[in-house]
Image 1: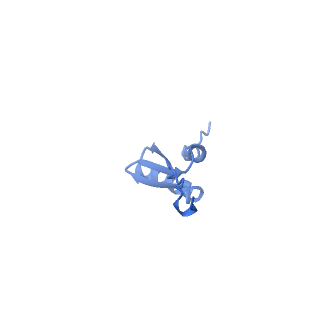
Image 2 (image 1 turned 120 degrees about the vertical axis):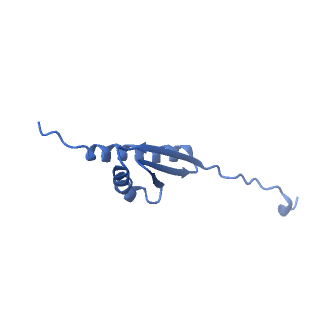
Image 3 (image 1 turned 180 degrees about the horizontal axis):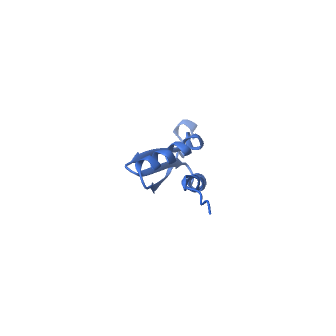
Length: 90
């Protein structure tokens, strides 16, 4: 059989998309969170602010990569959130 006539097994790559929404006390806190996480997420996560909510969206070609990115994002968000809380002086 002529190689040019053989059917090609080209599968479309499925992309996995994850959106994480985080609500804060104010739009100012949301902006602080978005800006604090941008350096780590510049090429992996898109973020946008709507009022006092930040939406982080990531896409990957495998579920494992998408979940790892989401896990890293959530961990980083938790660290920044703790840093934003006032310290007890007791």
